Length: 155
Length: 170
Image (tube, rainbow over all chains, first blue to last red; front, side, top):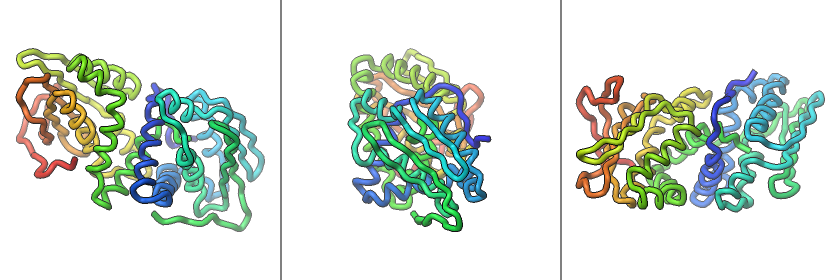
């Protein structure tokens, strides 16, 4: 069951606003600060997903990934196996909309994915990784590492 | 991808981080400059009608419970947010709200209105109340923009004394 499950209209321009916020943080406080705020978002806003992962339950993570990818009209593939979730974003709706707004994605854009995912996993037996294959195309992996907890980063 | 549905909860975390460093006013100005690409020509060319058109789109896309009324003598647009979806999400949030969350709205809109020759009297009502009332005046109204908090009734009319911000954070 999802903690947040919006089902009404979308304001896609918020993808541009997310990019602006990441840039503001990185340019004024450094990339590590931007990562810290995103990780905190992953850990605290998505506390429900985080806490379930800590208990070994990936069900809300899987539902979250599919619900919001479908809401945004993403093309994606997802494979779920015991202790592993692999989500391949084939065409990222955030980057697609940023292009519509005239915003070019850059090396900071995908921190929203890598760091929020990392925050969801922080202090749990799960680890996340992000492999960028091209513009708007990535593979997000969540893997349960028995007996090992991912590093907690303090903001 | 951070879902666009969840941007405001991330925004809220950005505000917490910047507020600890006393940097919210600079961030509001950065947002305002960025929003110029979306709004400034519309506001300059069409005045209050442009503001009305912009908020019609926002009302739909952001699922706002909001009234927009164009009034005469003096020419003004009254925007009564009955239930702000942005603050609503920030409150419905395991990370908890930034107490200054509402300040970002006047923080970025007023500089933009002023560049378009408009003036705004912005009643935030209370920082934990998902209602607010903006009265936006057409060019030539000769009114200074200001931000205050005052209790309102169900129609958005002020029904109690104003609390002014001693120093507006923008």
